[in-house]
Image (cartoon, rainbow, N blue to C red; front, side, top):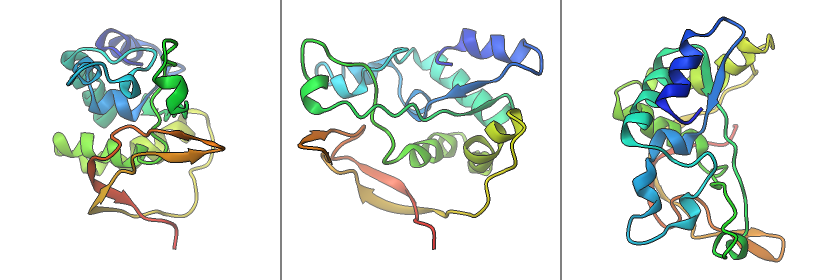
Length: 171
């Protein structure tokens, strides 16, 4: 879901209805599309919504077991994103969990990250929880400007910016 209205619908629906929320919809509103000019790497469908929508998504993400992470990462090449087509989708695979942590930290709910990212989806679908653990640590790192994608490149969400959270590899 990407809007407050959709989140309210899911909250009020029966137990067989749940929804995913992307990391980028938890962290950004539609202003990100236009900051300093058109930002094609923030263009996704459904499009980023208002700040009120983002706040509602964040509230249900931390509080309601009917919502869980849906990464929906879209690795469109720079050539395709920065064209008249402007392919929709944000490439977030490099830091989806880190984006969730950032959003949840903003409302002082880091305790809810693991459930949202790892447990609720499996529970809704009647699957066993994932085994093993990963560590999410407060460690600054710079998001690469691009990643190789065959003989082209993809520009990740927040390219060149600093992230304060880092998901450590399995040990």
